[in-house]
Length: 250
Image (tube, rainbow, N blue to C red):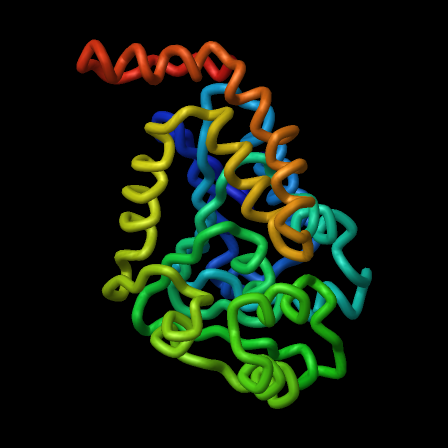
């Protein structure tokens, strides 16, 4: 793993840290490669159930490293990071800036926990670019049309409180507390059955754009492996025996 992206296993949770604090964790090729490697580690390790993504030094991510972009262009691995979602839930823990590509990283996660003094911006238009990393697709799913337009066309930031009010942020914390709060939430999620988590994440993602009859059929196919798994027997058995379930992921 690159030293600009650090990973740490905490029981069934993988803490992923963008580690370029001097550059406010801006994304260059090395960061994009490191994030993709961390994403694959999370997906492939059967002992991991949830990821938490954060930034070092009091900032989440200030977006793309524009100096690196001017030299070598768009980081090759970044599209995969932003659009090839892991099968496992990921929580963004946002301190400070989540601007441009940094906001899009947060939006690629399933849940966003943010410090009250964090700020979010679709800032690409200010430097002659366009937000093609997911902001213009994902923001309208949670925020009103006019608010998204104002953010994207002005490039001006909004506060964590406004982001929370519009549904972009699900939990607010005191400054410096977003990572502990995200880890606590991740640990609670990780207590649940891995196959159930994966099926639930996929179904929530797939619900948009389908009619109810279409979704019912789709739901059967996605849920079937979890419902026929060993864990589907272990859960009710553990409940009846008044003990914690021992999940196998099978």
